[in-house]
Length: 257
Image (cartoon, rainbow, N blue to C red):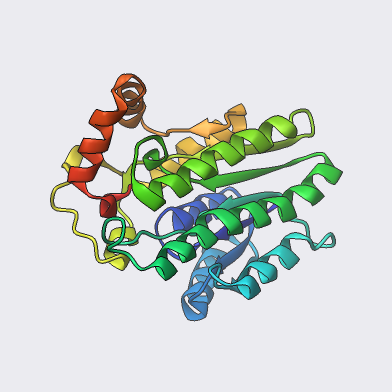
C-alpha cells in the first residue's frame, strides 16, 4: 500500500486530497500545526476507509517544522510515494501595508518549505524509480499579485524545471493552479469575498479529482477547471499593464486558493 504525505492537511484543498487518497486506499501522513484537529481527522479517515493515518504536527514557517517533515520524507523504512505541498496562506493588504515579517513568512512557507520538502521526497523516489509530487500554486501565479502571486509563480517555475530535470526517472512533479476554492483560506486571512462572482468558486473535492487525473497523465502544470483554463488563455494575450490594473483593483488580498 502506498503512502501520501499532505501538508496543510486539515482544511480546504489539503483535506480534500486526504479524503480522496484515503478513499483510494492510500495510507497518509497528515501535516499541519493543529495537533488535535489532525488527530480527529486521522481517526475519521482510518475508521471510514481502513487506512493508516499518521499525524505530524509541524509549523512550516519555522526551520524546526520543515526539518521534522524532511526527516519523515527521508525515512527509507517507511517511504512516501506521493507528496502534496499544500500548506499556504494569504496576507490581507497591499504592498507596504503588510509587515515585512509576514511577507518573509509567506516566502518561507510558499517557497523554502516547498523547495526543501520536494528535495527530501524526490531523493528517495528517484532511488525507487517511482513517486509523485504535487505543489499547490494558484492561478495568481500568472498575473501580477504582489508577494502572494510572485511566490506562487516561483512554485510553478520551480516545479516545471525540476520535472524537466527528473524526466525519465519515474518521478512526476506537477504544479496545481486552482482558482477561488471554498475553503478556510480567506477567512483565516481576514479577507472579504463578497466581490467574487459565484461562478468563480470551485469545489475542493472536484478539484482534487481533476488534479490527480492530470498527475496521472504526466502534466507538469494543472489548471483544473474549464472556466479558469479559459481565463488563463485570456491572460496570456492581455497586456501586462491591463492585468496590473485589474489585479490592483481587486486587491492582492483576494489571491485564489
